[in-house]
Amino acid sequence: MSSDTQVAKLVLEGKEVELPVVTGSEQEKAIDIRKLRAETGYITMDSGYGNTGSCESAITFIDGEKGILRYRGYPIEELAARCSFLEVCYLLIYGELPDAKTKEEFESAVTRHTLIHEDMKKFFEGYPRNAHPMAILASMFCSLSTYYSSDAGLDQNIIRLMAKAPTIAAFSYKKSVGQPIIYPRNNLDYSSNFLSMMFAVPAQDYVVSPVLRDALNLLLILHADHEQNCSTSTVRMVGSSQANLFASMSAGVLALWGPLHGGANQKVIEMLQRIYEDGSDYKKYVALAKDKDSGFRLMGFGHRVYKNFDPRAQILRKAAEGVLAELGLKDPLLDIAKALEEVALDDPYFVEKKLYPNVDFYSGIIYRAMGIPTEMFTVMFALGRLPGWIAQWKEMREEAGSRIYRPRQIYTGATQRSLS
Ligand code: CMC
Image 1 (cartoon, protein in one colour):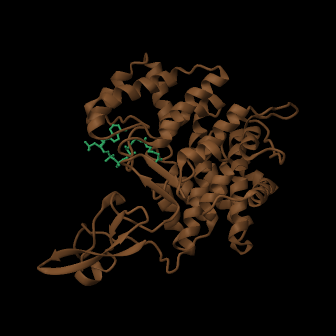
Image 2 (cartoon, rainbow, N blue to C red; image 1 turned 60 degrees about the vertical axis):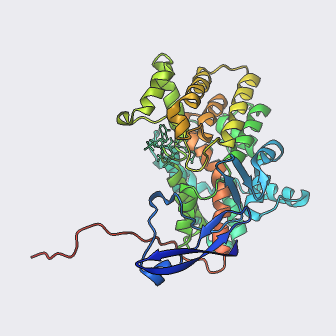
Image 3 (cartoon, rainbow, N blue to C red; image 1 turned 90 degrees about the horizontal axis):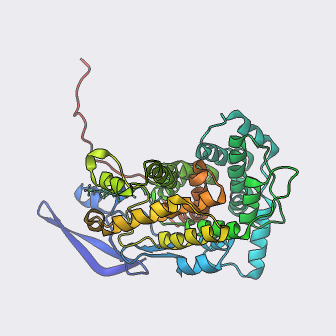
């Protein structure tokens, strides 16, 4: 960020206040209001933080109007086509793509830390069989802090989190289907190992499909960071109190769970299934989404930032078609999704409100083809988003003069009154 020679002038109660203008490396501009309250007594109101810059960050750049998403300057399309998820993790967390030696060391470290402490397996036994895996993931992330202290050093705990997250996720799935857990295998890459822990069964060979491995790698990369969204800002908020890494990531999982955020991927498939069971009359649901009284929204549509297209959704639409074709599968839900998209993109309601398919619209079709149950979809999002949360947390904690997050409010309750 550079301080600009330009200033913003605000006239309040006849008094002129000058506020500095700051400019980011992509020429994004902001008015720095930090001194506003001290000088005028006023705060700014922005419910939902739609126009509030809460931090400076060098990690991810989004231009919502142009449909641009870049991690550390690299376009998402290039990273998705050419990198492994762990390379992208390294890029997000440490700022540069790893060279060959560093890549090998990082991958080997993540691979060698995939086991969770045997005692932690007992935690899984305590949950009811139908426990939502996001609840389990959040509590297990937090529980990691009881095994690994911050004294181990940040890099070591980053490796542990990245390595153990897929193990925890897969164990929670195995618990839900009543199958024995499958331990991680050190001879497999990150995505293959996860698929093996999910779908292998004891005493039977499990060969990882390269189609599924590559599809998972792609999905994880596309979800890896998205600047200041609900879960990431939660991670920063919690971390700003100097809460430990594991506790902060647990908070991120919980924020992601909601249906307006990462939970939307589960809701999309449930919606498509409902339409299918209702005779595939998708136009009826487009009409319902336009009717405010119905309380129904087209899940997987709309985005606070993207106002033309979500580049991740475009990549995923193609990938969904490719994965189904390669596996020789046909999914009626993909046909409904494409038909819905077509109708909505042509409908004045969606056009005027700039509502387009987002990342969650097509991801579920691929997860389904992989055999991942609907309840696990948001866990898959969390596995992908983890390096982004870590990178944002690390950036905040390493920033000179970083302060605890503490917004203001305008009080609208009762004025002073007495009990008597
Ligand atoms: N279906 C129908 N109408 C919609 C939809 C939708 N999916 N999304 C927004 N609208 C309407 C909304 O009713 C409002 O209309 P009006 O201006 O007449 O009141 C207008 O569009 C703006 O909506 P908003 O809720 O004020 O927009 P927002 O920026 O606060 O919310 C959103 C963004 C993503 C939460 C919202 O579009 C939504 O609920 N989408 C469905 C859930 C979803 O797919 N979430 C995943 C988001 S992408 C991945 C992620 O971040 O996790």
